[in-house]
Picture 1 (cartoon, each protein chain N blue to C red):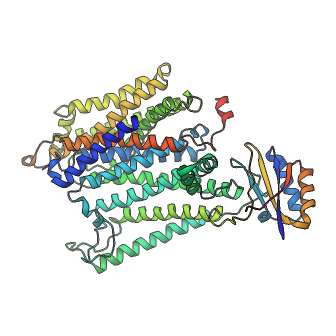
Picture 2: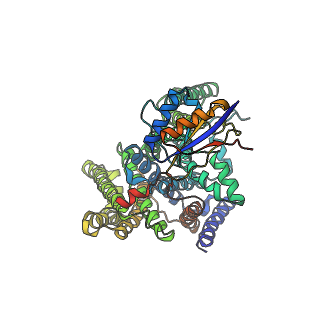
Picture 3: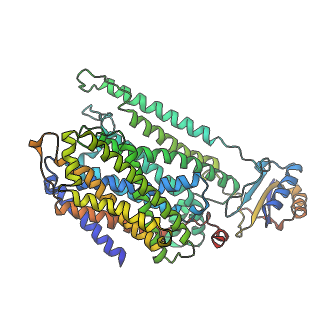
Length: 170
Length: 409
């Protein structure tokens, strides 16, 4: 049975200290979530979120490129235009179409991967989300119910304010 | 009140288009040999304006220019709406617009596929990709802002913001994904934006018409697009600054920086225009010289010299002299540039088409009331769309904006 607790920090440095202590206490990146009203950049190794977005975008672009080249090649060969002896399929005059569809693949993959990686549409609605005051950083910790007190102690010792249990959403 | 007036003008333009569809394309002034008239001028002009957002926003994002923050949303919105309007013109220009879907490749009973080598297909794919990318580029950084709006909104606005926010909570996972996506999108959209205006230029340059068949047309068009896009952005920013009282967000130094960029683009535009005309003049090829003469000293010369005056002389004086450079002069220069760049598109299209290589085919062109109505309506539609957008969404990116930076500035 897991429970959630939160602590609020007035600066990034104190939040980093708390995260490092929690990690030393056995909490992994999946147990920790930082909430803020603007992006917070932590030093490398504090709370890394590995991303494969660039690779996915390149893959999406390559996939769309292969699809459009195959599509144009096969339609032009199966439904032949009268070209007066010129090639039925010619790469250069269709280069613009290939380029644009390749970029469309990259754009759509970026958007799709953003949705996936951010977890927006696959978020567990029963997990509570803390309300964040402007210019503060809120750290949410998932822990076993019996470890609640020790996690709260770590948060308080690191300088967190408003350490409290976060109730699950109805 | 303003919205109603703009809506009425836009509705008049739609009615004129309806009249053209009902009566036939003959009600427009385009006829042999000038088959491309105001519709194509407007098409190139609006696609050019659309470069305001993506190029400016993407370049400034990629270079981490801090002063961009209050400017990017306004610029990205211009892109999305200008593209919607510009993208309509190939449809307006079609004689049988109800058959536009023939341009899309789909299995059909006639076993016909579009000719993928046609520049018309290039336009369809380029504009579709650019519009998709621009909408996503506008939408992504809006997500945190609409999530905040959803907390206080009621009624249909609450529903709209909730759907658009996609359940944003402000977690580090979401912020990281957003920042990565925005960096990637900035790079991708930059490449797409350059390609789109290159494709528009190649629509002309691929034909062997006088003063069109030029290797520098693509970069010339891209420079012109950024130039007119910047001018459109400065005008829009000044209007929203005054009407929405954003004086504490949109500061004079933002306009100074944009004005300096505008001056740079003015000089680049002059360089390309000079290079293009010098090459034609020095080559002295008779068919080219006919069009050249008509532009520089013939019947199109008033438009040509007005264009040079407002695109170069006015920005050079008002923005080049530091003492004169302020928000008002930047706006005056930008309005001039918008007029000048519209004239530039007119001068590229109409003189060449009215003077083809065979002099027996020469003709005249004067736009009809239908073309003029639709042209005016697009400006009203652009203003109306922008107004509605700025009423519904924050025109300044709230989460990116840091007040202390502005105070320092």
